[in-house]
Length: 339
Image (cartoon, rainbow, N blue to C red; front, side, top):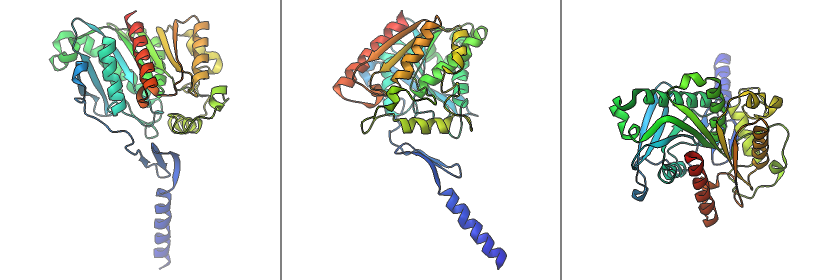
């Protein structure tokens, strides 16, 4: 009877542990003590075919690696001649988000149509189940896959629907928020291994409100955000706790690229970089400082600041003002790519 009571007590205790919530960002993610993760369907997933006809864009989902479940959603504009390739990483604090979220699907379809480029939108592994550098590895492996397609050339009939429309001699990396962080860190990895990417060439990187952090707070991080802001300081801190290697703090170089004198930035042979900054974003000061360090290190940096809008306005805010700023952003991206 004593053994039975002990077993019952352990069963109750284990059940309680499974129900203990250890991290939460309301409406987005819940992490329990037993490792279980819940992501409420706050934004709907849409099929790749759900594109407005006037955009004249074809889209399909492609699995790159069945073992890691790495996949991409490719968008090819129906245009004459060859167009650039843009590899895009969605945001979501490394913990949530998808290329098939309606907001990202609509944004990347618009990029393909209005910028005039083939967009490869990446579904990378999410934290905390797969902490960094998993997302960076998925980003790098996606570039290697693009390189492989370039090597196949016209012989790959399975992907001819998009390969035939793009110029694979050069490509761009882009992303917003955590996706911009991924784009930056994949850029550093590519810069260290330039010889591995022939016959393709990394021509530039576009960082939209890049998600960086640090232990010391900046002035923009201390400003109170209005109700419903896409990114608050507490949410940012939670994302970093869930995504960085266990035991790391926010001065880990994956979070704070300016730590240790930004030696990685100064020593790397980086392509031209465009940084899109929102003046009502808690990340504004970090983004500006990042651009300053890059410029002082002799890197080519183009800065675009969007007034009166906050974090992720281009995908989450449907106001007339945000739509106008989004069109500005798309025009800036087009100019950067076609420069």
